[in-house]
Length: 105
Image (cartoon, rainbow, N blue to C red; front, side, top):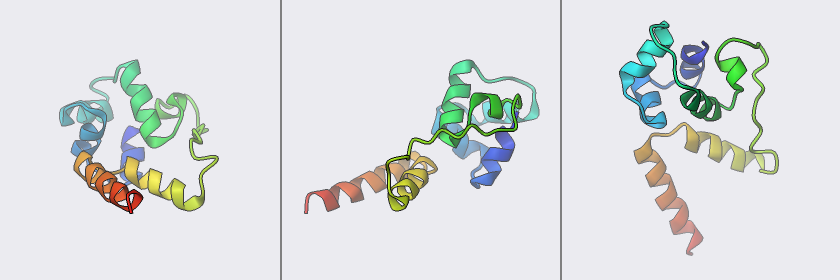
């Protein structure tokens, strides 16, 4: 599985990843070490977070199969969405509060 590689690429800890996908940090540790495997639901959640296919995530393909959910967004909007997805829950709440304050002006 390429979980550790993907996690390190965006510079987050196992705990931060666990918080983003709603599991305990030891689950991520066990998945990365090969002691356990995530459920299909978790694989889908993780693949969406990293915007790669499940096949790429589990090592069945070298093609990331990048899911382009940003096709109709400007580069700035896509960058904002990417950073939002990589943020902690607290950071996301702060970003949303800030964005909403701009929308009401």
